[in-house]
Length: 362
Image 1 (cartoon, rainbow, N blue to C red):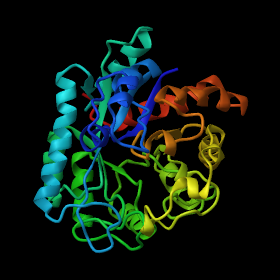
Image 2 (tube, rainbow, N blue to C red; image 1 turned 90 degrees about the vertical axis):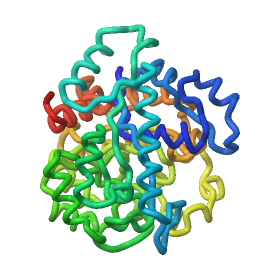
Image 3 (cartoon, one colour; image 1 turned 120 degrees about the horizontal axis):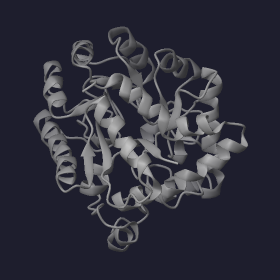
């Protein structure tokens, strides 16, 4: 079974955690000096796992009052750092490790090439580029520059307040030039990722943006209470617009009790709250099933791993040691009565369909 990972901030691991992700996973781990954050993905491991493509994120924040994670004081610094992460993906593509996907035709041909070959050790992984948080966009019209550079997906915000919206750990509406930015995104075809956005900002964004929306790595508030997850009303809004919702492998977002105030990120350790075995792939399947029940079909649920961006192995469901273990969802979903076609849609087909429909045709 192929897999389309709906969210992989690979540049975070490759640059900020100083990992050579072109190496086999055991070598990445042997060379790693990030205690408590054990990698579960690398490019060779993705090929072994059947991960044909991923939404490859770059994540850069500004620092504002109320920020809960590191951010840059200067707008130009945020822009420069984001261009650096973009250059990382470009370099991997030039080396033949990945293939930058910017059109629906490219995506279709790329996945077909993977479907046609059993030995994928030499195949490039598909890179669809996404911006997590729009702070690197210096002004609304500059979204066209990022589009020309190959970026096809952008969210307005990440953790804390952002330049254009309130994000995880904060409450409030759109900020600054957000309405103008959303108009420019729609005009050029940039897809809006709703992940991480605060509730008020969520609804205001939908008033200003009529284009295609998605939730790259987003779980269900009905099952895991907390502001980081979406309410059923929000999930239905994404579904009604034809969007896809990727289930995140972050156990903070799956544990069925409210365990952390995200304005105090880092104040609690996971193992102070719940043992690793408390969140399993069955738990993740509950979130996938919840989306399917809301939709009335399996056409809007998918994988949104937040792969290695969520704390590595310790922050993943109990059965996950490498990205290859994403395949374990297949029999779990089948045992719940999902057909082979539905399972394939969740594992990769829904993301493929969504992006083929909304990327430039050629």
